[in-house]
Amino acid sequence: MSKKRDFKNLISCFPSEMKGSEMSINQFFENYLQKESFFLDKDVLLSSYYPHEIKYREEQIQEAANILAPVLRMQKPSNLFIYGKTGTGKTLSVKHILKSVEELAQKNGLPIKPIYLNCKLKRVADTEYRLIAQLIKEFGDEVPATGLPTDEVYSIFYAKLDSQKMTVLLVLDEIDQLTKKMGDDILYNLTRINSELKQSQICLIGISNNLVFAENLDPRVKSSLSEEEIIFPPYNALQIQDILRLRAQKAFRENTIEPGVIEKCAAYAAREHGDVRRAIDLLRVAGELAERSGSLTIKIEHLDEAEKKVESERILTSIITQPKQFQTVLYSILFHCPAKRSFFTGEIYNTYLTFCTKEKFNVLTQRRISDILAELDMFGIINAKIISKGRYGRTREIVVPLEDGLISKIKEVLEKSLQL
DNA sequence: AGGTATTCACATGAAACTATTCTCTGAGTTAGG
DNA sequence: TAACTCAGAGAATAGTTTCATGTGAATACCTGT
Image (cartoon, rainbow, N blue to C red; front, side):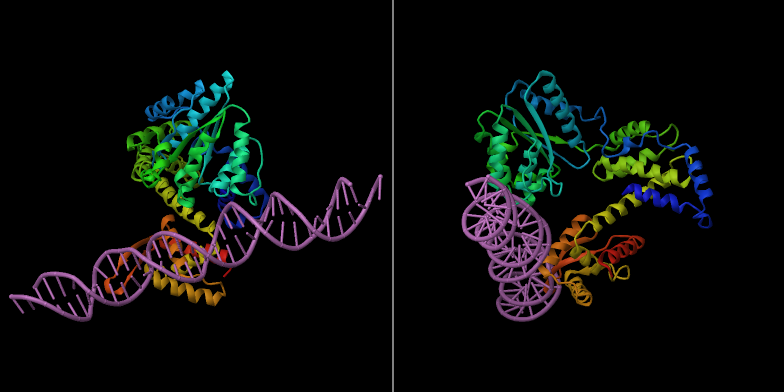
């Protein structure tokens, strides 16, 4: 995806009269090669990068390690629950611990199996069935994607798990997504697994970025799931600066970043509840933009530009991955934009109706549109606030917070996708 | 003037339905011995 | 008789519909001054 984009940008750098001439392409590539890149190692700034040390999380890691340590003596550790906003290093820290547990286990020949699953991944672990199916896969077996009763899958899993003595450390990342969709029966079943097993045991580690997640759980589940809890506080601006500097040192050549850039980048992220991932992403994009524009250093302008770009790209990608009806509804909203920026549910439903009849799409009920609007709000594409207009009813007041340029870009994308 | 009852236009919840994809099972069919 | 084919029953899942109930405050209506 991003490679494609890079390529497009490369091409658009040509003066148009040179396009198609082979000489100039060679020339261009040669120049490109000769010019020193900003980046020493771009991977450091990718979300897949795995740092050796995790700064400002020593305390939490130590605590988690204390709780999980009994596993090395083949005792069952308490189930653990980890809270913290996005980009506060939860996943990274847990993976870090898992890795060292795994290494130790391997060295000493202990039968410990750490498993990490992200419950948000669509079609991987976002339902009860798939979660168990994925676990079975971890044990090197396959189970059909559908057609089997869930209990059947459970018993296969039990058989697998109990076939030899072992301790499983099961990490469920974004566990709130699981219960949001399926209810907390799944968690209840998971916590009960241990009583079904004869020789093996399983220790659950739940990760959630919803701080009040456990509050609305079944009390039985809650007590057994969160025997221990760790909270990951958000990083403050200074800490983010420090982390960014560390990464930047590895990623960029010396003296490529102008003073103030890191500080501003950190400030952006601190504003977004201390999300470091976001900050790192921002820095990378700023670097790419600076390099492309031929600048010698990364300036604050590049950072500002990067922020816009990251945001609009986030929105565009989330739009194109949505189903047709979502796009249709969004198009109905944007239809009157930017002339009009605020709408009520009824208005949108009406434009949606006329639009659908005109294009011969099948029409959904208002009930469904209401849900779709709520979801669009969650994505941050629109701002929907429920207001009461007194005698004139209760409705969502929908505001489109996007810039005009982005709106027309989105419209373009939607028209292509809906084949208008 | 002040209080309360209504009323609107949806929001929100739960359950049921639809279509798709896939497995499992058992009856019927076929080919080889 | 073993192997193969194929239809039908059952499941999981995503997306949706149907039905029922909830809701905040501007207005209509009433009450007492």
